[in-house]
Length: 322
Image (tube, rainbow, N blue to C red):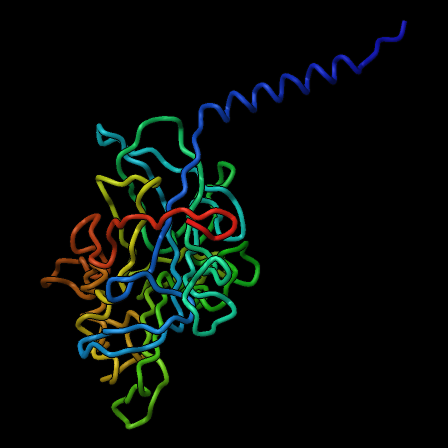
């Protein structure tokens, strides 16, 4: 007697679809928008900037991108629920890369026809009512993928999946990724102490004082993590966005000169330009007191002066109309 397997296959397919639908019914999508702000307005791409630095100078955005991770929604009782990120070229494991400057450059502000590369983090959370948001800036040492711990910050940029495969966002295997990269061109080249000049003034944040060789399987430990958390007790992703304020970042920095170390601030403990930058980020550059052991740690948990909640821009339809 021959038994047809078609009904069995169809039944399995229907059961699988039902399970999938039941699982998706228990989840809700979430999209968290970020905006780069300068002088009270949204900027990006090749748009000119104004009122930068201590001398309130004009300038041009050369680079603006950073890693974020560990997104969690907060409910009214203060409970934190992790956001499961969609896996794509901008998001891997629980890490995402935000990029506010498009590949084409030019002088136009970001628009529907000239968008920034990536300014949104997307994922899902269990269905529920959420009132707040938490996330961290940087690349974690490792994250979980399919139940296994995988190296993130100290992984090989040549073989890592996107968005960890960008050479411009990495120092080396030992030091790891550049967590936070901003570069601006002031009106005139930056003058260094030896009289030489540099076209741009930079902020490159990453872990420092790292030991161990990940290429040979050694565990890497860094004296100064330089990661920080951002927590908002009140945040509605449907009507609000996260503003990143370039004016605040550079408010106490003279972007026309460099008094030592790397041009601008590249996280060096003895770099004269770093104290003002780290204060704006909400980080301790060095220990706050002898033996405090808080260099590279957040000054106030969950608070970074350059991050705030702003009203989301009006949604536009496919024709670019509001």
